[in-house]
Amino acid sequence: MKNGIDVSSHNGTVDWAKAKAAGIQFAMLRAGYGSDRTDQDDTQFARNVVECDRLGIPWGAYLYSYALTFSSAESELAHLLRLLHDKKPLYPVILDMEDADGYRKRHGMPSRRMLTDITKNVCSGLRQKNYLPGYYVNEDWYETRIYPNELENYVFWYARPGVNKPDKPCGIWQNNFPETGGSCPGANIGTCGCDTDVAYIDYPQLVRRKGLNGWTKSADTAAALTQTTGNSLVRQAQAWYNARGAGLKTDGYWGPATRKAATASVQRGCNQAYGAGLTVDGIWGPKTAAAVHTLRHGSNNESVLSLQAALLAHGRNCQDIDGIFGEHTEFAIRSFQRSAGLSADGLAGKNTFAALCR
Image 1 (cartoon, rainbow, N blue to C red):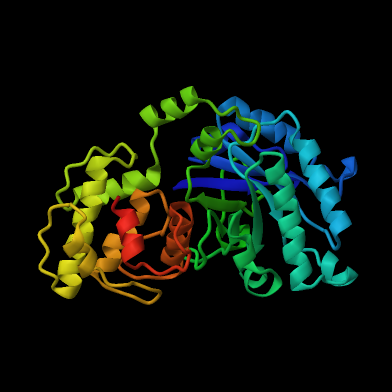
Image 2 (image 1 turned 45 degrees about the vertical axis):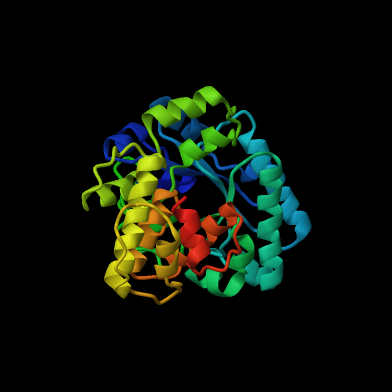
């Protein structure tokens, strides 16, 4: 988990050295707004990129959307691509879907279908150019203005300030506005503060490993990352297993020892939740498969704990290992199931547990 901020020209001339010293680990920079016109470029974007690169602050970019039609969406895509030319973000490139200034309301708010398709078109266009694309909405837009199930393949940046944790599965969470206490030295808008964010995925590792956003994919880069960083979610799972006596090296990589710890945890969970009487040996076999019960949204027992830990061990973010099967756990399961070639039904049955323990 990384702490960051998002800024635009409204933040003025950001003192990035001061922001970094305050603990900022990434930044989302507004590139511009609306269609592809130079007078709609963010006047601070170029400087913000230079300063973040100079200080080693990984950054992503976003464009505030005004699109009402497919043609205006195409122009916004062109706007983003122009502004990103010769730049190499390590965080996603985001289409900011909101109506903070009421433009869409005044000019005819598009239908939910159209807003979803606008988002898909821009994200698809970014992906075709080998960027890591995503979208930004708040709670109201998520529930009433778009169809989020059609956007699951894109990064979701969720605006939900002033709560302890997001209530929707997301890759980046905008956790505070200035009005809810968001603040960062060097980036505050006068005395009002600034937007703050949390990233749940190691995007720099993902971008480099896959060769996205202008970065060159190489075996050397992947090997270097393997040796030095690993996956923070896997490390979190390994630490959880170690607290229960696993004795793993917390290197952030799925391997035989972590697999054995995950399987042992599943066995222990079955024993505690269902009285299965399994031998906790870390070996997936017929008895373990027979002892597994299907878990679904609303399940709440020791077996859910082992499921959540196994998802983290595979790099799938379910937010907490708390034994409560909620939206984040379901989202993580669907993501894992798709990658494992399983039906992405969001249920954790025998096939899903078997894949998690392989």
